[in-house]
Length: 366
Ligand code: MRU
Image (cartoon, rainbow, N blue to C red):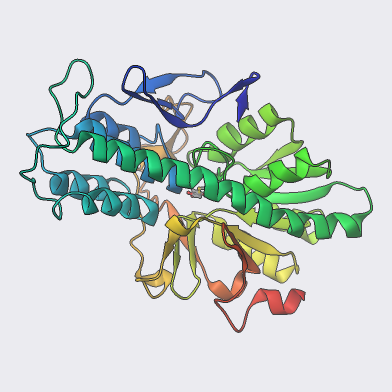
């Protein structure tokens, strides 16, 4: 995607210098800061502090953390355990780490040194270096390809509404940031939006600000605007009101995990948007790659919901200004569960899937 007419992805490998580089998302939209992930601890910190965030991207970042962190002092299994604990809700992270582990002897050191390669210039050669690098690059490329395909499969959903609206803009509501910053390129929820815009369909996006970290206000507005897609920022509680007024044609959100029964775990507040969409007969789509699907977990109730620190809620302006009295009690669940029955359909790299449910919103809308 473009920033000031230069092509960027959210995280990339620079082969000429053997460096892993990424955009620090905590600095956007104020500054474009590129950081290097030099060590395993850098990778852990980048994920925990949400310098990299978004389900597909944290999977990719974890894979590269295992590449840069690969050293005699820590086994792949130990790296995997620490990474999975950083952000437990998005299944993409665990999926990526498991793929990295599969190329070692189940996470234990292997004796074959044939894959020794020179690592970062300042570091000693790394065992499994080339295998880890190849796998991390493969995981990254797959996320890019999947997101592009999601866009292609989502485009007809927007086109169908466009045909009905006869040239009027299609108003799409989204929550959090499920664009290229959250993936590596294109995005999940935003991929169909970008493709529609690029193919001349008039789209306009209602962007939920997404308290407490404001991924919508800071990141979604930023990337849509960089791409020239018309958008309007709204407070998190405005979506239902806009739907009642007939100002929302379609909701598309991403997912951090989709369980076997089709429940969707996504950024806190997604559930309320789904309820409002259901009540107002607004189609509600979830866009996600295979890496976000978790067939081994039965329902959303079985997913561990990440709890984040209270300062995210108590302070604004980069933790400078307190907005509640001293001593205020806080809970800060980062995700919620949208039951499958509220979801119209799923946009994946394989196409448009509606095969999870029998009693579902898509029946009401068809
Ligand atoms: O806490 P975050 O910012 O990592 O949460 C991101 C979301 O909830 C996204 O909607 C989700 O990861 C889908 S990303 C394509």
